[in-house]
Image (cartoon, rainbow over all chains, first blue to last red; front, side, top):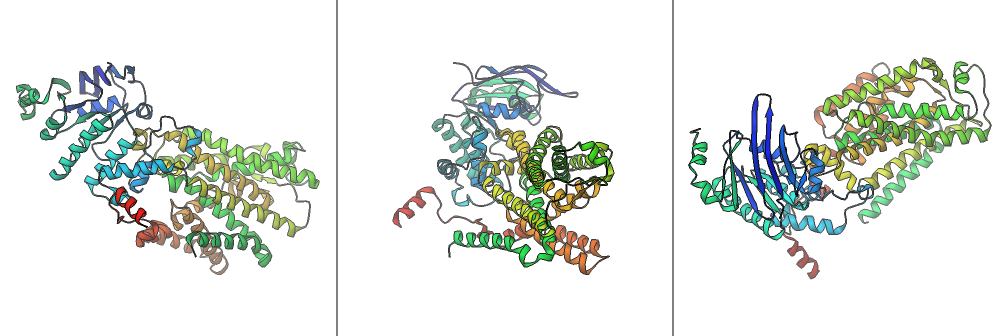
Length: 247
Length: 354
């Protein structure tokens, strides 16, 4: 079975800073894969390279076997490879339902669909997903007025509305209080199991990523340091050293 | 009375008022016609500036382009345009009623299409610019167009073009152009009202709120932006064609590409009424035009000061415009509230019980 994402020998430098050097990893379909590493280790750069934010210097990125390293952001998104942002990004002057509706997949968006109203089924689906993340009662509020944690939940629901095949989550639990985190882990797992979405997650919170991911990659100084199931990674001396700054 | 009935009543009153106005106030026909042009200006500016977050200062370009395109077609159908313009209106050229009306209709239609095509072409170039750079870039387009036409002898250069004379009575002429202005403004409003109920509105709203996010979600951002500008250009082209004929004489800097008057007014009117809403620009344009005309009549010499004061009050105290301010004060009236049903299941139970 082909991997959902296959990154092979990717390097990316910004001026003199080598953000990624010869990184190779694979995200198998239907699984939850984790990506960890100390601050500045190149995790977000790798995410940006995968979704097409900037061209890569070397290497190849394949999505379902298809080379995507030359495609641009919206094209990659329409293939079904979607990302959320570390600094939550929503459409802050629109209400929650509108945020959800405009997040429908744009794969087959033709000229006619641009000028038609949203079908009632889509509104229903938007409301159900808002209920799934616990925002149903606030669906008519302007999304920019929601709390930060609620905005993160909304961004997650918007991603689900887009029906992606793979979802890249950049620190989904950053800035969310511990009680909400448990609910979020549960929802991420359900999105993976019930909607069949492959997840690739950057996470700093070790408890979260160890609970969530089946396989974890660790980056340090832009290079791949270790790979393995959570138990192994947790006890890997190189990973511990990288986090404690022994490098 | 239900909300829908109230809406029908409101629309009916506005339509009736618009139709009756030139007969009730025959001395003000031109002034009221200009009001409809202003409403069209504010509505079309708001598509980009309000709904999409791209503050164009160059929309007046499409107005002027439409005006000149219409003139060229009206004249070019029957005469040599170069000869006509080089006579500077000294030679009286008569158009038969048939020639006049055919030229006018074809001219208006063509100017709409030509302006929209210009929007597509310029869209490819200037949509790479963001924020203030976009505003300045579009302003450059409008100013350059004015200068270019001013130096183009075939189009009459800085001396302008006398438009074909209307074959009939002055009163009939005033009413004809009044109803063209009125009709184009109403058509623009109704078109946008339908358009804003579709996916298109949410897409351009998403571009306004966070364009990078919209791209990351797969929205065809460039396509939406170009269509939005073309729609604005289409209606501005029509209004330019009508306004040029209503004035009877067109020239590049004051009539066709007046960046510092009409070009800025369209921005101010949308801001005053509340940008990003359907009714805001209509309200803003009406208020602005009335204040402008009153100060021009009663405060002559101080009219620009009064207008400046209005702008300052607007941007300091009512940044959201009248409608935006109302929405902040009474959010519930605009449907912004927490729902008492906390889930879709609750709602279904409740509607089943009813």
